[in-house]
Image 1 (cartoon, each protein chain N blue to C red):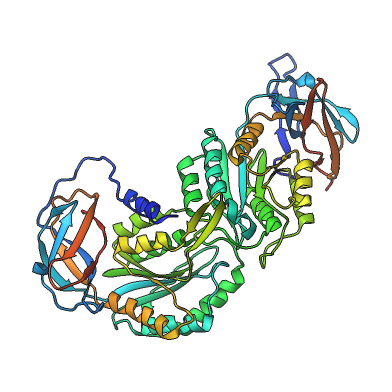
Image 2: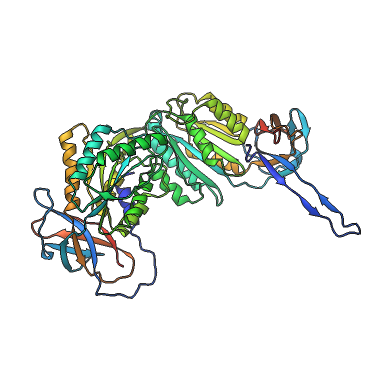
Length: 300
Length: 291
């Protein structure tokens, strides 16, 4: 899928079906989790509403409060173990366990693998024997045999499980991006994640390639493009997995962990509470470089 | 079990009109073998409007009565297997766009499942007439590269249609022979043939220009009453897909009562009594019973 097509699919996920607006209740607020990037690429820790602009469907809306997240984050670490991905398991176990160790004491993780199918186990404290748990999950996976690579279905399942958890919600997806055999599509997953406030970050083991199609034409195959779009849409991060360069790979996982523990809740009152999805933009107007926030929310 | 091939056409429990004796007429166990036949003129044009008397069916060489006949357009149920292997990479966009044309050619009640084989064998869970879903799958789930685990894919496709009733079609698009296996998956061509013939799957094969297509798949297409199309360089794949869809839609339904319920494979031959035409149908079937 091209980047433009991925973007179109994601925007389609925000399409609004006509229905009668619900009566508005302006006393309520919406809170979205976001993290703010400093000049040095690290998450900012102190900030005020005056530092940002927040737009709902293109209209400026005042930010009422910015507060650090409370109660930790529930994170599904979702590892693609389909046939198209070959992991160095020892390296993977180390990186994932270091990722979990870099999370906060209130954070919870669920380590899930998916091949032909996905199942997300219950959440546990992040700082535990994640490495041993992952090893067991991979061994279980080996017994299942090979099928398709239902990346979108696995994420849909993860969002369903996360929707039952309080506080901030996130998915860390490790995959090659070659999604096959899915009941759900990219747009549906984007919509579902946005509706349930789930931030999706991804570490992709893939490479883009140009393939000749004869007659002087070529096609660019980019398995990462849809997932990159999904990460941007949900306020997450996207990295290519530098598996052979251990220092860089460790830095990637550490960076994802640091962003997940540094999220803040931006509170605002939308023009109306109509139960529908709306476009959201939060942008810095002073010293910060970027705000990683979801590009939509449901006004309910 | 020969699902789809042998229909338990009727378990009649007919109450006769009230009479002085109040007799009950009871017929049971009437079993019908159903064949699907394609008729083309010698110039290749499809012939969709013949009547029953144009056909003859022979079971082990002996003529049998045709008890069920239909020349009505038939909805189709197809598992489409797209070869994504390394040698097909140069046809990637062509395959993708042609598959969208196939989707456009579907009618309501036609159902298609899209599958790919290459690095892995992936059959999408949707077997549907919803064109938006099928287009989404084509846009999001085709990834070039890998080997050619053709027979693993055929087995997986048969698995995926196992519980469907009626005519079940497997349409493969490939440019070569089976190569590369998937651990843990059944990949035997012999077992695929045995299963396709015994359980009544119909196989179509489209060979993209390049190396000759796997002989096993072309033979299976012939044995199961499907078809084989070899694309020459630059040929229109979209038109070939549409031709297969039209052919399937206009197949004749011929049914007969099997002479022996011995559970064995029987050779069957469908012929046409009209000049200038030829007919294709499956070459054998497994008779019911025998247990």
